[in-house]
Image (cartoon, rainbow, N blue to C red; front, side, top):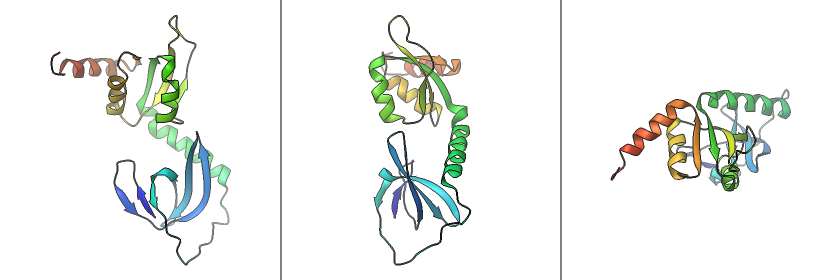
Length: 160
């Protein structure tokens, strides 16, 4: 299979597919590669070729157990990059599309109807890109350091 990694790099892989999984409207393939189980997003496959070979699934494999463990590991991996934002309610559909499974509402709307959300991202850079991209429709609540970083970056913009 030809697969595009998160960073845009394209690689060739030989996979032994175990299962299709749908999470937050995204499809994933759980497959074994080089004796290790991995999860791949279906929409990142450029091409798939069926080989004239077979494989044996692990006899002790339990899909439910694997998936719960995978989700826990995923949450732990991104726990260092958790952000609290207040956003305009019209952006909820955009967040669902851009960050499926990585956000949740954490409170009621404020007097303007803006919603408080918790969002797990890959890095501070992604958080800053989100803030600049949604300028005027998002407020940073936490972490405090991100507020200062965004202000410093804004001061560096031409004409500021």
